[in-house]
Length: 325
Image (cartoon, rainbow, N blue to C red):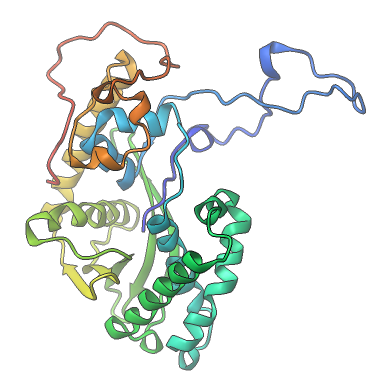
């Protein structure tokens, strides 16, 4: 799983200075009932790249803009929220001694992790706002249980001792591009060989689409290589929805190829950021997009561009889809 690690908070270089009050107003004295308590979200040019945001730009440059620059809100989905819940359960299961990492133990973690998720992300409560009897939520939680149970048919947690779980990684390339992401699990063999594991709660893609899923894993492998000067021995995708395990053993040429691809992608993102030209790319996935009301392909209008722009120049950097390699 790869959650977004990009946005204004991360784009700042560690500054913790408070934001200026809205409209440049002077803050009022302490205790004043009219004290200013709001802050204004300021658009900031993208400063790093994660697998999710790289995939967004390849899928549709305008979608990337909506998510990274405009930061338009998106409704939570049952599938994505269930994925977050299952990931949390599998992460927490490894807190228990090896012999106690059983399917019943894992399923018993679901209610508590669901409570924590609702507390940390109140918007997910909206998913079941029209379910007063709780029947749909019960079915949804039941599906989460089935996904957790299926994991035990694919891996044996009593024989695993992860070196890292939900590991945030970040590396800066020689070009200055920062790559970052979150790895579900890192296993290290006694011989020092590294395996990167990612859980997917959906089904494994057909072979002709498998390379797209491996792009995320090769991205992680590139960052690990740049950080540790070690090429991961194996990349492993665990598809809980279909009960499949997909593995790939990368070599140096794979990582060098991904790095070249990301540099070209970043050039295209920087050009779009500077010119304000973010083109939509219609696909079948548009039917699930939360931003149709702002998309020209659906008769919508994007919000005013919040960053300064310069005139576009024809420098040969294309927008649109770029293949996984």
